[in-house]
Image (tube, rainbow, N blue to C red; front, side, top):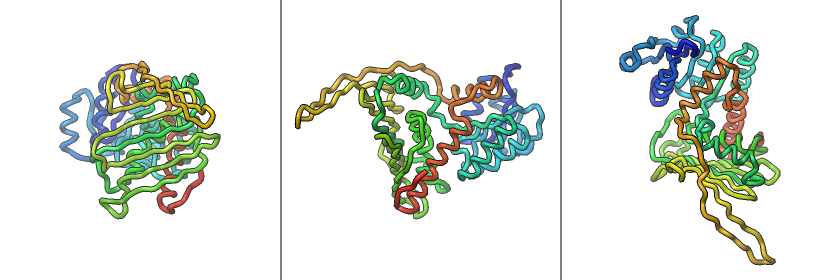
Length: 330
């Protein structure tokens, strides 16, 4: 273990937690791994023999040598586990969403700040090098004034019973949209389709209105014939596309298309796509480093507690709109 790295406990070693454990180990910060399944604990004890294993969250929290925890458990458990970890004096990273209730999220954010503890949420795509390059382009003004943002996160599978597609997929796209816009939407309108279960939406389309001419929409689905993870940002000077399914230079492209009126005649001048350079680095590795840096050096991460609350407020408004069939204000 890196002697200078914080000692971190990886909580939950399932579909995503296993990758957190892998990255923490590579960074020299993995001290203990926790999972309720004995067979899983055995596999990870063999994979990372330098780290210890624990069968309960309380065992990890009771260890004074553990500085921080990274939680990757079902979303319904997040709020209670974060609360317990903060009570134990630990810095906390929790996978998205922060919790399932806005008031609880706000309380946890205040609690972490009062205790001087980092509370960070796993909005992974904020750490994607291609998105960070896109955000830099937008903030430099290369696209001009933003007019429209739309995102698609669709695939076939990873179907849930406990949470709908909005809560499972959309936090990623909402977090990116809020970073690009720099503010919360004023109101949202969302609708969805329940095809496999009467209670759980398999697809949702959320329309976000920011005022001052900026709009966005987020489409998510786990009933899609192919994988499509795409973010399109349209400004009055240029357009950009972040296609996370593509690779190499095609992943992030700039289009300097022009459109204007010549009297009553619309004139469109298309331009060739220009690749936007970005670093080649695993987003989760960047996210883990950001958490360790926040714990060790006090560097604020992009997905801090305040950002987690903002994303949750938008999710909550979208869900209210789904429930009522009408618009919801923030």
